[in-house]
Image 1 (cartoon, one colour):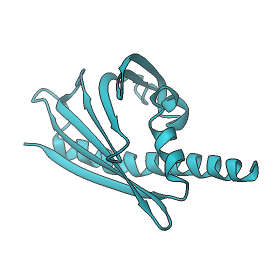
Image 2 (cartoon, rainbow, N blue to C red; image 1 turned 135 degrees about the vertical axis):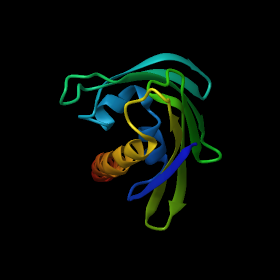
Image 3 (spheres, helix red, strand yellow; image 1 turned 180 degrees about the vertical axis):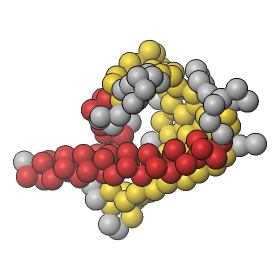
Length: 156
């Protein structure tokens, strides 16, 4: 049975900046610091990119890493990703939606996943993990993009 979760945040920055920063996959180690140790681009063709994320070791010294494909559709204001190396998941699909609002850009992250039977964590535990970690990650992303927007505004 699949789990579906959704998170959103409003970013007070120009749409183009939000799009460019959040889709510059090669710089995600900085954008998502300190969670990501590295992001390596494996292949890119057009608007589709294959990349490996390696997270910093957890408190028990385990290092999580996986490969994903991500396709960016600027015209639709949406990106779609799927894990190629699924790790503990049967599948993991992620959709990011970008919507211009008067106060900024609403960035919505939708996750749909199922865990493998041999996974030590239940789907409920995995959902709880996302509920705890994703809003914090989104806040860091917002802070970094809004700081960059302020820097750009000062140079104009």
